Length: 269
Image 1 (tube, rainbow, N blue to C red):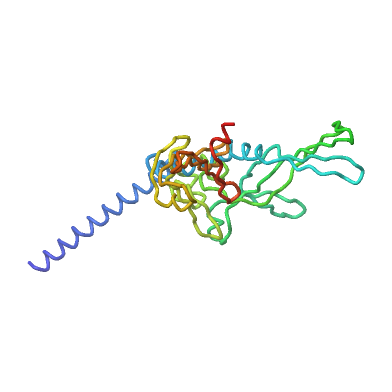
Image 2 (cartoon, rainbow, N blue to C red):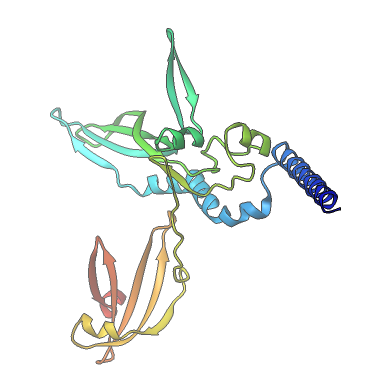
């Protein structure tokens, strides 16, 4: 009887394991053969990172290029040349492969960067406008040309990534997880992520009290008003209005890593 019970229990356990394996195989088959994209609720975890990088690709680079001051110089022939950026663009990661007499472009995928201990990056292209002026300041020529400014890491699953808009089946064919969410970089084969920092609300004045403000100079108190201002390309600077013990107000701000103090009365004049 004991032997029969053991055999019966063994058969029940075996059939249970087979049923679990069948269910697991069925689930994996459905997951890897899905024609839609990764699960949206999982992608929402890294969505702020991907959206931020996509904004840089579509608008941020153009706004950054517009803030770069033009470079002007004079030649030996007394001609004045003015150089300025027109546009910046990050290309999709790819390499050139020589096949016989032909040179072909091969798109690189994140799995290749991981296995090859490489950096998943794209080329940063810049279009530069050159304007030529004569001795009287009259424009006599204008020409634009493209230049390669090097490589820059590309965020996984961003618009510049070769995995963008791929469904689950296509992701698996590129040796990626079916629910690859992205939002990180691959540098020298390692996955790296940029941390999001919690900052004070932009363009919103906040009255506060900080004891270390007293150390900024004679007459300074611990009271002031601070506001974080941002430009169009999202570069920020913190401006602080310090209340002095004389009743005056001084504006403090950082410029090129140096702190400047200007009385508000001088600004109003």
